[in-house]
Image (cartoon, rainbow over all chains, first blue to last red; front, side, top):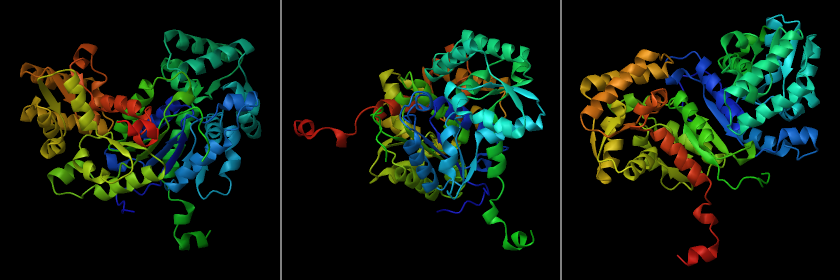
Length: 251
Length: 251
């Protein structure tokens, strides 16, 4: 392996493809927010993007194929390529990820945990959750919010159905102004019901929300962006294993 | 390895990071142009993005560090992860790539070759070349155009200096309307000098040019887009090794 004198950063592994547009959006944010004035200051990244992972919705809601073997294969590829930090820019699949990360010699940053940490920093008392039916059924956000003592509200059943249609439209690449208007309407309802902040807890919705007007965007917390920022922060820190022995001994 | 019943496509390996924004832009185009209505119809992609590869400009023009070991490491990672088709969304580095691809058991699509093929399809007689000083010095586009019998013109020395400043601005993430205006001016000069089509032969310039007005865009040939389209086409075809024996015997 060549020597990399210009980068002390750790290699970031992105388990992506769920869906592919969400991976593009996350990688874009990762590059955009890395403080760098030339190529060589950017992070080394390896991406395994397998969009053929079976639908997480069907697995969680309709007894569809368990995506676990596909996820294991991806993690195997990423660690084999030297990834030192692993992230997964898909909220829903976090219903499956945590047990798979145990006993792997890499740091794992959960999109759910970094999002809840960001909400705590903003001291929001009640947040709205925009997430897929599958993620809601698995409770990925609700469990983490409960542990943090933060109240949440969900869209009405009608709005939730509309949201799932929006997700499908983004996945199919069919998005226009009417979809943005629909998303703005769902957010208005959550605000009316007391949410001071809303999680765009599905990477397709994060991608769509980036086209909303700034004043609406200010009320959103984007897990994809929070994960990008946390990834940049962690990748530029040395791992604990790299802390010189004299420092670890004095702790 | 799990079975992937929903995708007959071959795994695409992207040797990226040169620079990282150009890789984001290429991956975006790859996803955007893949005919798919759901995740599972998209291509499986593995990306090795190492922005710490030494500057290709300095290597080609100022006797800087040879990037070859970094490229070999990346190719090793991509083939190790199962890539069946390898692409490199950076024009300049193609001065180094061809010899490295020999004897590797993967299909290699050259961004230079697919661009020249697209120019031939459009039957352009004289094309402008927007490329880095390093790519021009190495002659990556000129050699391929000469073989295809296509004439070319280059920007004036002043415009070429301006172009290199634009590349640095994109790499540094500092881009505004004035940069777009400058690019439009360079293109106007090439058109005045007889170019009916101009190659945006640097992935940073491709990314910038995507914000130009449509009428200007129509005169451009974007190697990054051509590579994305060719990659999608090839990845969805079976490899020669997968053609049933009876078919190969009758050729």
